[in-house]
Length: 215
Image (cartoon, rainbow, N blue to C red; front, side):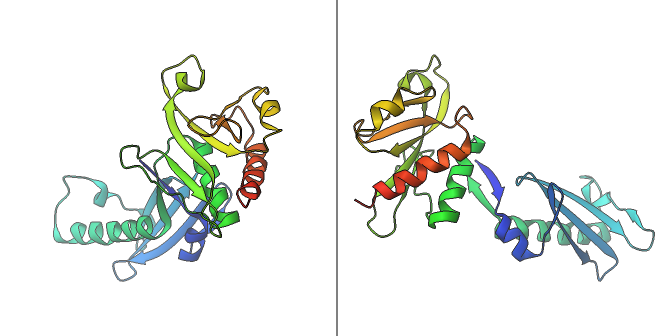
């Protein structure tokens, strides 16, 4: 399982956007050190600890064998801040592929839908549903590619979406769109979340599916 930063939570915590990263600074050790933290690409954390008296980076707290009360206290304060940020600003993403994460993020931001993991035996399968009637409007599943007709037994991540009955035959005739996996094939279709279908196009299909789930 991977963890991804929630950008809104980062900003609320005090991070500022700086080109392709989000940056945050705080003092530790009674103001003698400044800890600079960068979150890059929503999942990578970089840190730099500056000793103010010399204006230079301090790294002894990162040396596993370094001992002593002073370095131990620095290490503790450093780790407490990182743990706090991870707890308050990061969320677990059980999926491996970026598009899977983006789809769940879109559902949360636009429809306030949280992923629900309904099957303990299949922890990498999730659904999102409308809040007004509890109907699903998509499912993200991790399955062997061969199960949807791909020439691979490797695990792929896919999304099942609703569509109008009259539109399904046309949709599944398009490249990279497939008959629904584990759903009613008259009302649903499947997209593999490998980037073969642009994410903005997938968002449009999600919007359609959300509206159809109201019926």
